[in-house]
Length: 432
Image (cartoon, rainbow, N blue to C red):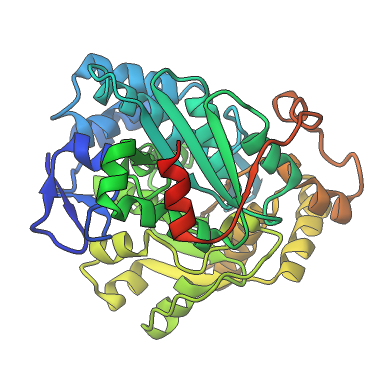
């Protein structure tokens, strides 16, 4: 299969370049020339398949022309080594737990798949691969875990100073090995812009053999579509869910749209955001107006210029009306999010993280005007990653910290403080 740039459909490349180069030279994003559809045989039998078998069929639909079946099965089986269970709080009110992986965040699915696919694509090469990633919280930890001490790779993580939680920061800065962390004096959008600037410097990109681990990389999105199919089949047959997606860079929602294009029956999508409501505002007005992000307690969603919006536009052929017909946008304040954390615990006995709480608020609002809907709210990270918020709302000891996160608490933070300056960043990269 060939992959084209969202900015220029005539610019088309093969899988290896699309994944390893990550970003087209025209600053678009790569999309498959043809969006695959899973056949009737799959949809007749998908409820009986294992999570791994679903993952293979989806991955094969996208990558099977380029990756042999045995290699693709190995990649998927190594990725889907943990479950994504659906928890029912009340009739029609479901939570999809995506935090059962090694770094307790949904991004483990994409990062583990991407690391394995890149290893296969570079299996015959002896050049070191430089993985460059910007994070607003969970991406960096998932990528660091997936690539830690992988031969032939080095990972450089950019994160905004003072804008990730303490334990999230330790996941980025305390692993050592082939992982370097840069603490940028700026926002996530600034970190993302620095990463893109490095890729757009062709000489620098080629010299360092740069690749991205952000959701600008298509290899991150395809495996995230696995759990949309896996979760929907946990509902009664013939019930099409409303997926409620806490959204920042909009990779997760784009993955859901890909699942729908594969043939998954989906009633509707809701893009749930905090005060960084650029996409919900667009869905209301038709005007897309990126702006500087603001800091909230749901920090992974603090994005003012979401990269994957261009992929969403591509999927809807730039039709605002068509996108609005399939996706609704809702935004909530920190105060509403804190109240939701308290209410979910009080009413349902369930501890939800700030991002999942934003999704739950949107799901409740949707069901109020659409009685009988079955909403699936994506709980994208374990609440223990946001102890300051959880402790403030529910009291200390409301949630136990899983050991794989707790062991990082006393490790030394090792990060390089860095200005938001593309020229200095490029010089630093050249010095490596």
